[in-house]
Amino acid sequence: MVKTPEEYFADQCFDQPASQEGSQGLTAVEQAFVRKYLGEDALPGLPVLEPEAALDSEPDRQSTPAVLSKNLLRNEARIQMVSFFVRDQIFLLPVAAIHEVLRHLPLIRLPLAPPFVAGVVNLRGRVTPLLHLDALLTNERQYRYTPQHFIIVCAGDEMQLGLIVDKVHTMYMVEQNKITWNAEAQLGAGAEFLCGIADIDDRVCGIVAPDMIVQKLLES
Image (cartoon, rainbow, N blue to C red; front, side, top):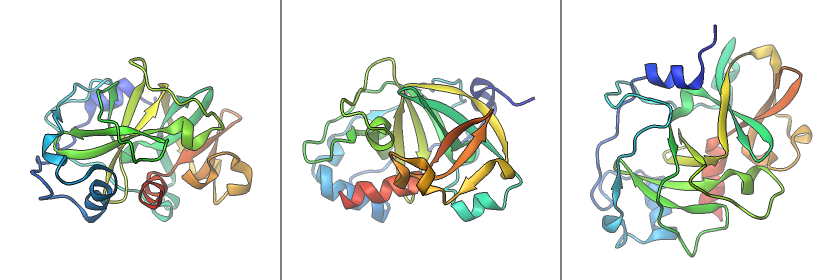
């Protein structure tokens, strides 16, 4: 039986990254983000948040989430994924790329950032932008971030991202023959941030690509 999101994250033990001071320990991508939108002088003033996970993940974690490429995913016979709602649409993320799921966090807004960036937090020592997925994946123009929202913290290309979603739906074990990669023509709005589509109970769901979102973040 496939576990629920609550059961899965309760069983996981992911390492918490070490705290950083100033720009020490930042990856090249994190440094680029800080210079572009925040300013290194502001970095030490970001309060370090240590929130409790929304889906009962344990604090004494022992492994780290992976940055998963599309080519790597194609080699898996079955891929465990979490589904979640953005507005009334269901999207997917591979479980192995997810660090944790949190409830609404206080954030620092970035006046120079593009509209899809809600703000930034220092999450356990990692500079973590919080992003409006409805801005990236739907045609909505009024972006929401309320205490009812959840944040899926996932591994991107050398940068941790917080993806704002309406709610986590359920878990699926998806067979490779149910996935179509490079299906941009079928994806519609937000196609550039999706790496494929999966047929879930006769419903087509987009698979979110965190690495593409990081690229957009640095290009904007």
